[in-house]
Length: 528
Image 1 (cartoon, rainbow, N blue to C red):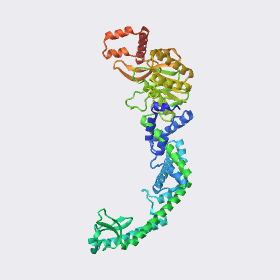
Image 2: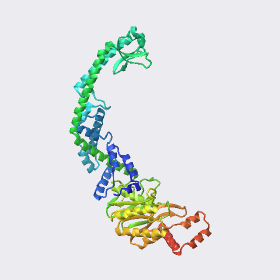
Image 3: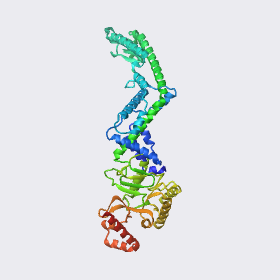
Image 4: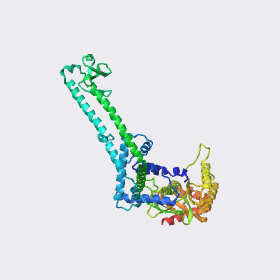
């Protein structure tokens, strides 16, 4: 697929919308990497996943909560590294999610053959899950029950802390010591319990100095009566740390032995989350699954540009590939020609990415090998190229690569140069594209091209409807009718004098005036 077209058609904005619909970081990652496929079987399969998820969303939604991206943690354990306790909680929560998803699809009453098969392949590692659950609590801390030794150590730490508290309470309540205290409290310095003592009573209060206040008036002293107890606690804390490291090493080794199963489960959960993200996006857009073909046939009813507000955008009907493979759209500026063309291009990319599109049910769309576009102001200051030169360079590159089963979007083909030469170039380019057989949608202002489309097989005129009374485009796409310029009618309604308009009509070539009259008649017939 041609990469530059993604930027032109703003495909990345669709991807961002899709990412926002995913629950897990792994699902968002799949959305970020999504690219259109030109393989019709792959597209149909991907669309079937979106359809399956959409059917389920009507009545329920899978439990995707608690999923973490644990792939890097699994890689660490497989390399023999030890993971941290909080990381262990991420793995445990993700294993809970695996169990919940498997249960959801097992009990799901809605027909969901693909997802049920995926969920069935999720391996529940019950023994490992229970062992991790016995180690870490819901706050990410190691449980006392993680091992018999850890329980013993922590029990002794608490016992020593109680003895210290009793001893310190006795000191703080001793009336002989009251004048020594800066504050009648116990605090901690260097992980040891200390009492704030006034500097002048240092010699009267036996103990070890661990710190002093910034003013020097207060010393933080560890009473001699609890030195041994503090030493005991310090040793127990070292023993606790060593035991925690041992427990984490053992459980990391057990996780490493199950890495393949856990990675497979993560992949399944990510795919499920991704599929439901596509379904949620479809629901948000009020989108449907089109009928797919690979014959260049497009028949989109009430198509809406997916990046425009659905309440304001005017739906259009787009037909291509049956009777003609080239569509020439004409009409006034700001009338919606480019938007119509971009709508088709973006809907093609979305479909080939396995996404539903905002069209009426029953619409048809083709799978193209490549989508090319030459849209917008392509002026290149860096390369000293005019708008015409930049467009022509792009078109030359496209013509060197485009094939029969590709789609091309050409905006204002041949513009930016002398109108007569530009029209001639545009006709020759369109003739070449028709020889190749590529599906082409082009916009133009040139009257010569409107006549060209009437005289050639395989090309059809179209226009964006314009309301002369309101001087506003209706944005409806009318296929089979070229657009008139409406310059005289618009000028008259804007207040230009009849004398000037009459003189303009005298100056314009007779054949052009006659052609404009024919166009107006045809357009009026379409509106009746």
